[in-house]
Amino acid sequence: MDGSSFDLVLWLIILTLFSYLSQEMQILRAISEIETYIAFFKSTRDKAVNVLVSQFKRYSGDGSKEFEAQLERRLSSLIETYIIFPVDLDPFGIVKKIKHVLRTGEERIEKEVAALARNASPADVQNLANLVEVARELNIIYKLVNHYYLIARKFKSLWLILQLNAQMPFVLEEVKAVEGALESFSKGLPIGDSAGPFVASLLVRRYKGTYIEPVKDTYVSKINVENRNVYVVRAKGPGGTTGRLEEAVAWVLSREKASLMISIDAALKYEGEESGLVAHGFGIAMGGVGVERFEIEELAAKHGIPTYAVLIKMSEAEALSTMTEKVYRGTLQAVDIVTDLIRQYPENSTIIVLGVGNTLGVPA
Image (cartoon, rainbow, N blue to C red):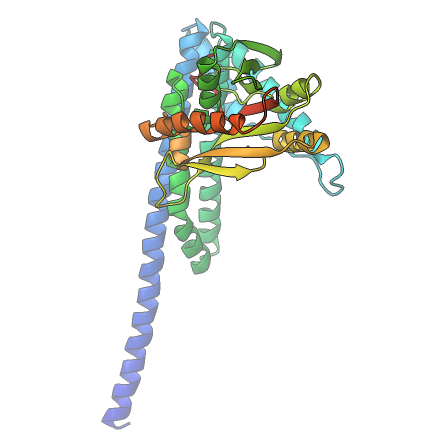
């Protein structure tokens, strides 16, 4: 073999070795980054559990070690509880089935929480139930990410590891957003998602309305806005609940014929958009699984009611953490926008205003 052939073979060997080592280093770097993320997710989950336990101890009235051990066991059971959605092979009637399962889960968790926190008020029970949901969400995220990571390590799959690593910044944003809810739910402070009920509350205060509670955990207030009859519907506060808006809307429509329905809710902003920006839309602004939204849309279509939406933009972290000044300014702007929309309709019209969102920290 002459010198040029030897150099070529040596070059190919070095290139192959370099390619192999480069890939191995890439895998090791990705693994190291994923493990760092997983450690953070685990610590965040543990922090949520510790906050949850301390809050329950505060309301339990029993500081014995036996009770603490029992408390930790029952809270672990609540955190590991899952919602099993109905079979949707035949989609007919699926919404009612989902609603039944969700209602059953909510009521059962609230009963468990009330039994553990005997000295808690109804509003405190709702806040504690929300804390359980926060801890459960963080627990699911940690376990899911760890599951995919262990699968990727088990099969030594470069592509699984790289795909998982690419998703970590997005998961991190969600975890930080959920973590931000711990302080708010512990202290009962309004969060960004409370923007809809907050706007409804400001509207009722401006026109000196009073509330009634025709359905569970839901307020309705009839106010007069320049000779227009306005029914303001929002969840009951200051406990953290989203109420049963669809049942309240049905209650109103069984008594009045509405000319317009306006919903106000928080909406996720795009990166680069300013928080607190108020946007307009058509339809029912409402997140979640979609059961309540489906039933309200059915009612609006049945009665031929135009639907208008007012959206207050914010990030996911802002939606779950204590309300910021920018979001607060957006709610003040939204009140004026809703009032202007009401004024566009003739006098003696009946209008329904829905303050959609969690009423944490928003009193009557």
